[in-house]
Image 1: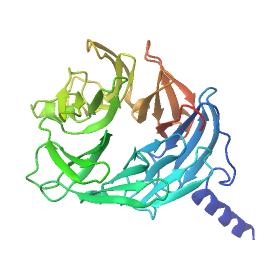
Image 2 (image 1 turned 180 degrees about the vertical axis):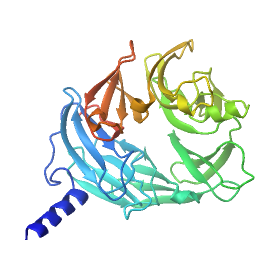
Image 3 (image 1 turned 135 degrees about the vertical axis):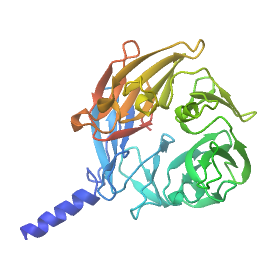
Image 4 (image 1 turned 90 degrees about the vertical axis):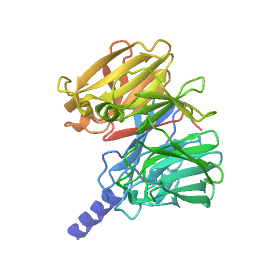
Length: 369
């Protein structure tokens, strides 16, 4: 009997939630949601979402999910959506909807490996790599989970590896490349109408290889971080670390250089903050470390701070919250070092505000619903 109880307890721990799913959490006046999933193990509930009171940095509670990766999440202030983007689990084609109290949940059937989830009016636009052989995009009604529109995407070579996507106004832009041996150029950008998902055009951006983050400032200017800028530099081709995207002309405008391989970024006031992993840069004179650059968007003058690679290699997200810069750390030798950190924008010091195991992604909700 004891063995049976032990087995049942293990099953609940592996497949259930960290708290009783019937108990609603009390949402503080200024909540913050932190998703753990960047370093998840398929099938063992490593992905989770935590509710934090960001006034006191107190953990309110956590819900866990049996999945592998959560790449992106979105919220309209009344619910949170994210894709369970595993490729070996039976939940690899699910978008999850969860209430701010982390109590009520529902799942929407989606295309395979829903990597990107964008909120568009009263619907979700879900972008799926589908094992990298082809791409699929769906528009899903947030009230019913019904698929409103769906389309398959590919390059001129008949295949695509979906790398990144971003929603601007009424268009969805999807970056991808082919596995065809003749396709040696940079990413193609496929443009779809956000409402109908009908194909609009393909932008062959000759100087862009891959975007890893998109940031919009208070004036609506859209900045794209080109994480693969070092590859173009190594090949002796034109490149930029940061581009401004003009949605009117659909042009990518190269900005002055900062540092190769910007992976994450945030804008606070007149300054752009970017995270760079210099071990990706092919230079024998460059030490392996993590750098955070602070760049004036008017003058493009910048300074930077550097951190030990073995300690800070696993930065998952970077954002502004209440006029401050925060980032997540999702893997440490000592798991107590995982969590949410604040960047001191004068000194570069990283200060842990709360410990959350495998913290990787922010979902901001400025006030309680």
